[in-house]
Image (cartoon, rainbow, N blue to C red; front, side):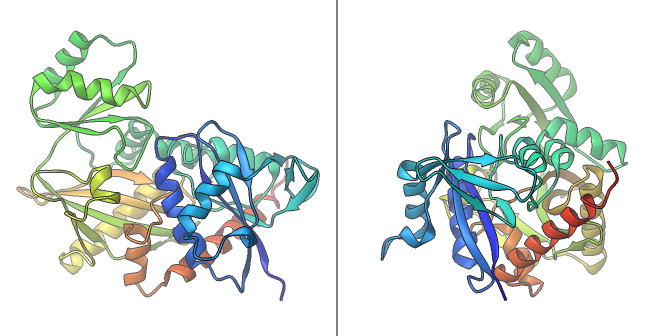
Length: 363
């Protein structure tokens, strides 16, 4: 049996560039090498594409170091849009690499927002995850919340602001519509990059400046005293919801970038301590949220359970969740009996299935 030619794309022009490298290294380490012939494509922070055969990995070189080396000194390459099977062109060797399916392990802008999904659609190549619409809707926290709300899902109050809005106007709107503490977030980013928890009006301006470094649109969201619950979804049309897990942040903090990828202070409880009825409700709401944004393949849906009222709030959805060894998405499915390598296997199968369906459509 011939191995499937699988491309892994990592890095990217995003504030989550480094997180992507960590996720991609886990995917490459765990993938079944007997089933897949791997091709690793790195995208630099400036948007250049790089390639280096996995056979060039040095002895004793860990995968993260190898991926960073690809970005630094790999051969320049370029995606090709051709009539038949998609390929990548190696500039120095003047050689084409044919790929069967591709996994964009790219978090944040230009990777999770529909941009690269549009490129893959034009290349006519099967790819893991949501399409252009699901990716873009799932990336923009403001649009996402509007879609959740339209579907009747509970969301926390929020206010949206743009780069040109004056601080007095923002201050006035926040004071009028929200109560402290609040969270200030770039609308189009993940992994808690650029997010600040703000407890007083005096600290708001600094948080706004931080968020505007990453996006021209931000949201200011009502803080809540709640349990943080996450549920993973797998599938295109027939969806599987994982057991829910709970994040218990360290002290009075929140699940920040540092807590997710550097600090071990936060605790992940899998499965979450919930009643069977509450678990079923979380799973149903996760599927509804998935469908609300037209997601495909996979997603991680984040919830709040308000401590005082026990009300379930849908917070957000991630169409390319973290794939590190400590990330919730693979951990939740591992609890369901799906090993990391089997999860990757299923994601590639889902990508090939939806590609076949798309290519049977009339144009």
